[in-house]
Every structure is written in C-alpha cells, then in structure tokens.
Length: 294
Image (cartoon, rainbow, N blue to C red; front, side, top):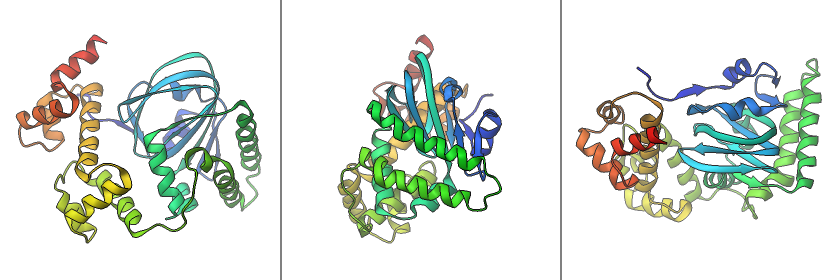
C-alpha cells in the first residue's frame, strides 16, 4: 500500500542530484535544478530551498496550494512544507541553493527578521525579480562555488554564513519585508513557539488549550495573540494543517478514506467527512475523484 508523503533530507538530495556541489554537508549548490522541477510526487524536506529562475516557468504546489513561477523570479520552500511540481513550460534555466535546517537555525537564531521572513515566505513563496537582480544572485552563487572548491579551508562554512547574511540583510530581506523591528516582542515569541508546536502536534492534539498550556498562557490570550500576529485564529491554523495533510493523503496514496481518517486521528469516518466538506467544499471521495478525472 502506498502511504504517506516521502521525506527528503539534505543527504538524500546529494544522492538524487550527484552533480550538486556541497559545503560541509550543510549547503548544496545545484547549477541546473531542472531535476527538482520534475518531482511530481508530493514530498517534504528538512531543508530551506531557494531557486532562482533565469528562464522558463513552472507550476507547483506548496501545502497543496497552487503557485506559478515565471522567470525572472525567486522561489523559496521552507522546511517541512509539502511540495510537488505540476508542469513546466519552456527551457528551464534555474540555479538552486539548499540550506540544511541546522544551517538556517544557526544563521538567524531567534531574530525577529527570521520570524518575519518565515511568515512572508509562508504566505507567498514566489517573488518576482528584475533582470538586473539576477546578476546579484549569480555572483553570490559563483562565490559559493569557489568556496566549495577549497575544501582545505577550515572556515568555509563560516564564510558561507557571512556571505548569506550579507545577501539576506542587504538585499533578499527587502524583497519580502520593508522594515525590521528589532528584537522579537513577547507576542511574536509566542507566535513562533505556537507554530513550531503546531507543526509537531496537529494530528494528535486538536484542543487549543493543549498549546496554551505548553506556552504557559490562557487559551483566550493565545487566540488573541495569534490572530493579531498571524491573521488567523489558532483553530484556523490548526485546521489548515489538517486539511493540507488530508489532501496530500487523498492525492498521493492509495489508502482508503477510512484509513486516512484513522491516520489523521478522527474518531469516525463521518467526523472526517464533515470536517473535510466544511473546509474543502466537497467530500473526501469527491475530492479524490476530481483528481483522478483531472
């Protein structure tokens, strides 16, 4: 039986893309990322992936939501998002940089800029570029390749971090956010920790009081903070995660609908059906049938 969504870590990318260049097993550079655009089955990664499109266009799905990338543009996938490619048009010319989760955590730590960028990318992973912008990214990419070619340099990962920070603070950050506010406020800290808890627990814990208890706040205060900082209530975000996972299992596995309901911790098939229809506008079976007809 075909179950679940495949998980690809940075080591697996190295095997899948033998032409990639790596820096200390933390950063991968891929000169021709066309192979990534042919991965039509949904998958997750533990990496942050940035693709720079010089030519061509691609339709893809992030957490089952459709996006269209047309050169020149930059596409960023966050770790733990569910990804798959629908189709590509024209000759794809695309460079790719894959950063390990460890690298990105060390890069930005708990800075406010990281939280702001995370939510900006989460809302819109595609950013249009000017043709003149491509020169900046191409230069950065080529400098990283030069660093990768000097394995005897014990500081090459540190150099990579500083170059990436320079690009981030000097240029990339401005593509997503206009202003940087400094240290995280208490509300932003709560939001950051809530999203992290939600990613790990949304299947087993649907009660918002669980998250409030873990964050040492009341459920009422948590709801107020999340709505204020992220634009949705905690329940709406939780349901988004469950619905996305439901769609992925319906579209990429041969599990029965009853098995999917059990997998997602619904007490009965009927409860799962009502949940799905309320949020998706159709029953799980209708959703699966539409995909097979498409």
